[in-house]
Amino acid sequence: MKPKILLLTAIVFSLFAVTLNAQEMALARVSYQGKYGFINPQGEFVIQPQYDYALTFSEGFAAVEMGDKYGFINTKGELVIGFQFDDANWFDERLVSVKKDGKYGFIDKSGRLIVDYQFDDTFAFSEGLADVKIDDKCGYIDNAGNVTIPIKYETCYRFINGTAVIQDLELTSYLINKKGEILETNTKVDPISRSNPELQSFWDEEKRGAGFKTRNGKIILEPKYAAVGIFQEGRSIVNEKGKWGIIDKNGKFILRPTYDEMFHFYEGLASVKKDGKYGFINLNGKLVITPKFDLVGIFSHGLAAVMIDRKIGYINKKGELVIKPVFDETKGGRWSDFETVNH
Image (cartoon, rainbow, N blue to C red):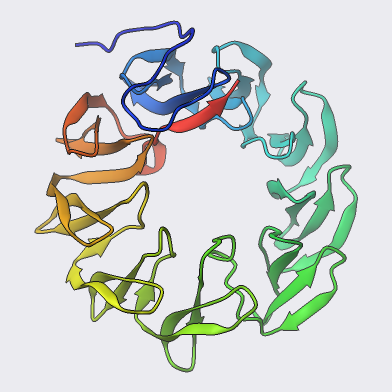
């Protein structure tokens, strides 16, 4: 049965505990019969599947592809920036990178070109700076397009709390400030987990193990695990001898390594794999949704995407299928979670 089409006005979503205000909605990008659209938590199309590809919404806009060109729509499905770009990304700090004639630049929400097309690759703005690439080197620009940190590094990560991690040709890692000044050489600041408000993970090459430390570098849990996740809700997933378990902030096992695969906690539940199927455990390590799905996403707004016989549907936290599996995988083998969208 084809999902219902709905023009969204004011809806109270009873399927999740979080209350959204009148200026917000929850949408998930889905692929249906070869086209992309957006559904609400009832499984109804808010924006009909009509695009060849689509990104998720950010700052009220979503990049969509039709033919071989990208444009941008708002949450009403109205085309607000026409189909004219060869590639497009997500808005961040009111700017988005787009591609024309083989180069990337940045436009604002009116479609006005703010930073000229000159880069071979670009990433989102963070704290007023964006990392960009020319040839195979990276550096940083401000929101007027001025190069503030020279484009000469091998790897550049986004700024968080006034600092960023970069790597040179020898892959030595440095912690820099917004002036490009080096604060630490051979820094152990992890560029991936450092935005986490709880403990940050790090890898010790000499000990060949992963552990956790505070933002100022104080080691809290020694690097003794084969792999770790990120701390969320006072829990982190860890790997020992090929199996995954859960620890608390003191390193005490909540669940000893048991599962073949495990993903981070979201909304109090983490996905696990057992005997080739996926289910979910709670913060205490108790299995609350039996492993029976081919693949699963994360919980968002009380719902998680699941794959059954190569089709995508959504379950609630009881494991009940509340949106039938009629959607296809999106490009790259991934599908979307429900996200809060401002409009």
